[in-house]
Length: 286
Image (cartoon, rainbow, N blue to C red; front, side):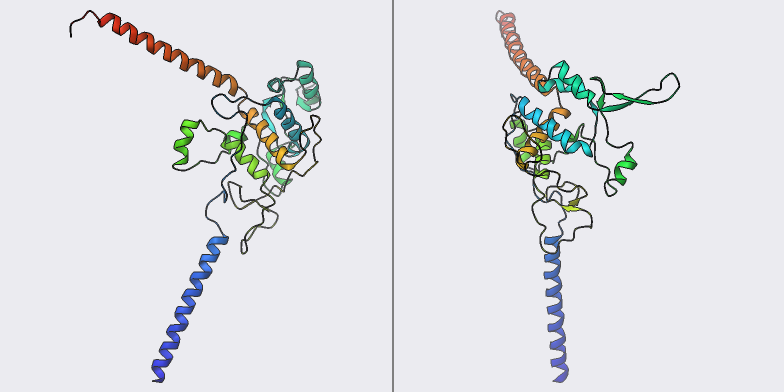
């Protein structure tokens, strides 16, 4: 009898241990996600969305201001020339003044030395760091990415069946949606039990993990707007996301216009081909 009781107690302890382990594993799996981003990016109503969308130049100018006063301290746009800012509605003189605010390296001179000079419209936005190693050393070992194509490179792929509808709606704003969501997602707290690496910051919208090295970059009233737009984190995030979309695809408006013209041409051409076919074959016996 004692042996039976002992066996029953051992079995109960084993079952309790297994159940406890299963519950612990379930809780751990909830706290430690296996997919990123944890939250899908929040879809926004962009002025440039859809086949007939256009850029809001006022928003782009505000986005440039946010980039200059906040983002440019860490992030470069080395593939973007100053003259590309003409698409924001700036005059030639304004672009020259913008370029002159930056110092660029040039040379060599007659003595074979490199030298620094004020920027020209043909120059590109310079990096705040001399090289990638210096950028990483100044940012907890993670070099800040270049912003030239970030709005096209960081789009989150949407699964089935959403991507099927995206084909018909011409949804191409996953990059700006992701950037906006990332910039506004820092205030959310990690769930209980989730371990965040020291020196990193939790953000459920980050595409490569549960936390990233960049701290929350935006705060209310951080950048002063001249057009009366709200000076909030939400507005800053929208404006700089739209600006980075323009930087990545400055000719989007002309591309859409050309595509629309091609569609009209194809419809007219198809109609003419059909009428020609009817004319040519109308007298032929079938």
